[in-house]
Image (cartoon, rainbow, N blue to C red; front, side, top):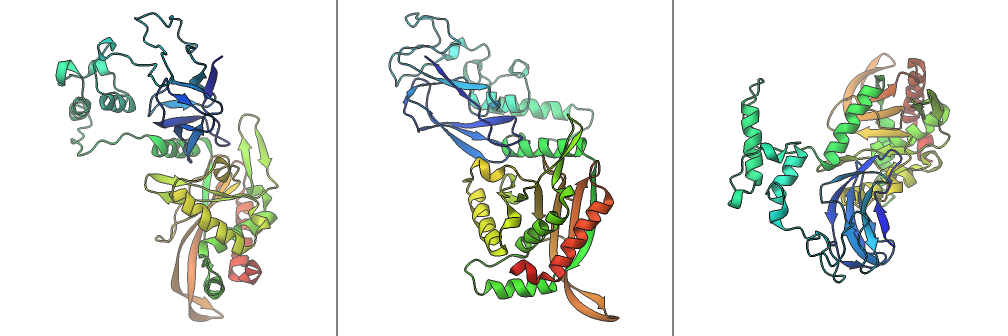
Length: 391
């Protein structure tokens, strides 16, 4: 009996996944535990394993986007046809047939395709939402090539009313970049985002951080001091540790404090999560951040490590300040800019101190300015008198 292979839910808010690699051909015999498909979500790449022995059959192609719980393919018994096929195995005209575990079961001849085209052309046209029937072919035997698709795009751009110049490069928004783009747009459209800025004196925190780093193998970063301070401040301001459920029109408050931190990748960013951040020491947080960031850049995180975040810290050490955008499933995000020496007034005297700008973005539908200000004041006090953070 056939067993469906479905798109798994790999995160709290995952709705779809993209097939980035199919390791087996339809008709291959696979054993339980073998990797058969690589899936890309907005957060991670995930290797899907066969959950039992069987003959692999895929409905999907590489670059296809599949909804969660939709069927990707099947694991079949020997001689069994996939449920979609009602043709008999001995029918010579059947487009799918299984002769032995190593033969392909979806070998469709090029002549049977309605519009002859190369795989690259089909992928690019699909990503750009262009119908193949509208593209002029120049390939052998009338096949549409990837270059034909690019020429079609250039011609349409040059004929547009906006007078867009011909691009030097065309790059479809796909994979992680598409997920990030969709997420950012939905975040702005579905929340009332308001940002607050505050300069904090990090002089003492930097001194303690540098001193403590000399005695441990993994130096502590200022960003991780801010993560620790954020966890302590959230304990006193749980209104920020929440989310609005627009369907039920309710505010959901969480007693667990799970802080995510943004990690830049070559093709976007990812937010690993430190679970129960408030229950961990600064040294433990620092070690976990280093480990998660390293594995994030090598695409080696598991779904649990990018799920269930309740608050996020985003660090950009090359700018003074910025306006972070809320993460899905959260009501607040903190941004940290660079640390820079500035002249400031202390006891009516001008002195040089290290200053950083922090920016807090909240959903104003549920978090008032007073709540945001209270959170920032507590965080400021913790960072400017940081001894307790290092205990």
